[in-house]
Image (cartoon, rainbow, N blue to C red):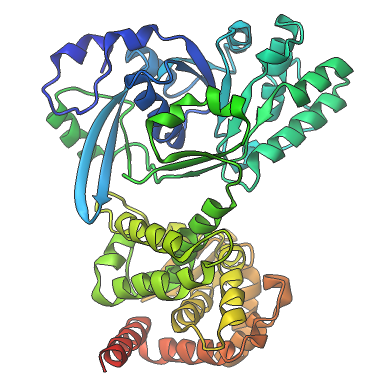
Amino acid sequence: MSKQILSQLNGAVQSVPKKELFDLPEKVLQFGTGALLSGLPDYYIDKANKLGIFNGRIVVVKSTDTGDIDAYETQDGLFTHCVRGISQQKVTEEYIINASISRVLSAKSQWQLVLECAANPEMQIIVSNTTEVGIVLVENDRIKGNPPVSFPAKLLAFLYERYKIFRGDVTKGMIIIPTELITDNGVRLQSIVMELAHLNNFEYSFIDWLENANCFCNSLVDRIVPGKLFAAQQKETEAKLGYTDELMIMSEVYSLWVIESADPHVIEILSFAKADETVLIAPGIQKHRELKLRLLNGSHSFSCGLAYLAGFETVKEAMDDKWMGSFIRELIFHEIAPCLNNELISETDAIEFSEKLIDRLCNPFLDHKWISISLHYTHKMKMRNVPLLQKHFEHDLYVPGMMAMGFAAYLLFMKCAPGESGTYYGELNGVAYPVQDERAGYFHQLWNDNTPAEVVKKALSNENLWDDDLTTLPGFDFAVQNYLDSMIERGVSATLKDYQFNREKAESE
């Protein structure tokens, strides 16, 4: 892949950049080279540029010298984006050559070049994805380091450089959009940057400029971007397209980027949003966060232990099975979605999101493993699903059977013992699986010292786990215990099949 081959393509690529796009000015500084950034912000900016809307390219800052820097230079910043999945229940594939990236700089060895970007008057936007651990306060970080260690300190150093160059011009502030998957990511990043500015004794005039001339926007991103293709898929795709590409990535079709702002200046600068209706600039993002957290993430967590213990390795395998696929669909539409009807989220909102979600879960191109979803299982159940249970019982006293079964499977999945390395392992059909959970030790002891009925009672009533006593939810503990007993005595698959069979039979009568 390079600029030279663009005129020689065989027609398999649907979106190819024109040569004038390579002359667009640099408007965006991006901290991070991860797949999510390539498949979401870079995707939108490339699309806008091709439509003549945004007309700006990206300077990418990489934290290390290794990896993709050489490939980006060799390929003139170009990479192929394979968009594959299900849309409106139909398989779809699209190939895009993304030309949004102007150059990639190493923070480690080219920090001065990064700082020089601060002198560019057309540079207006900073985007980041440094993972959730990237937005942290390192109090002793040296702002004058070459470079500073933490991302917030690097950001502060860049902003201070810009402040000095433009002598505090309030029109030269930046719009900063973190995409890290933490709540109120913009607010959190701003608070850390401000605290670092005070810790480093910056002059008051800069701190005032930092606070008032720059906009830190909360944002929410939602797109599964596995990144690199498997070797066989890569080879097959390259043969189809007629060229090789070290930077090729794959993503699902669905995409959403919600940026929180009501500022007309921010809306004007983020003009790339006009290129796609799935980029939303809105006064609040709580609605979209709730839809994603409860329907996508919540259904994953309620289904995870059940699907894995029933013998399914991936989400796609589970969706293809009559009983497990039906369980997940009905869980989403009949138990989770009704809990979301409030002043922010309408019934229509929940149904529309759920319908798109089913397409995403059925994506034949994604290899989304249940064992990966089980990471930090207890925390996910607490944050995603306990509020759903509480919401359900606020409005209805009947026990949500699929939520109860999912909870029982979670408890069974957490039956584990320590291995030689200190990692805890459960066992399925004589094969060990890792239980990567901060509460694994607690559950090992709980299962070791108690009967299944006592496990249910003590686990559900443990307010240290849930910040609530779940045995106070009428009939919930009894239902969880019945499902757990059945799973132990008859097997997870048989319990699931009987539940779904009886449910379908009752609905048909």
